[in-house]
Length: 155
Picture: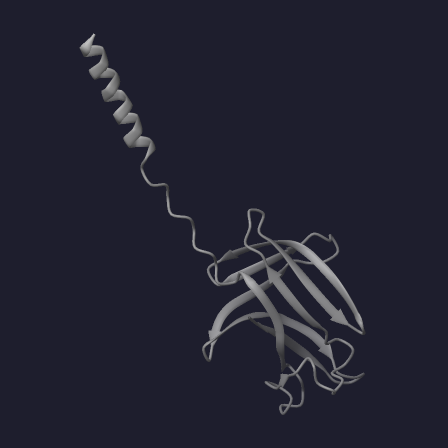
């Protein structure tokens, strides 16, 4: 009888030791999680070299074509990796939702709406500030002046 108790105690202790080992540490929260606001746009590809490289303030009184809008991206760290982008233009606001993935320094936003293409942003730190930098997008300032703009978001 004592042998059975010793064997049972041995198995109970073995089971307790194996079930009490620490689980893997949870993955750290990526630096892209948080609220990002459109801070400025960088112009490029214009025939006038004085325009290229200019930083455009989205809240400026100057009208930079009909294209410039303001937006905020809320990257949410939860089990389904969702995000909400709030677009504001012409006195209206719209919520665009979807899921995100982050690998290396690339954040990819996959919108739930089928007619909106995925968006890729690059994470970087510039002058001590975290930034998300978008891809180059065509912009037309007037009927004859066209180039590209690259949006920069900051936390």
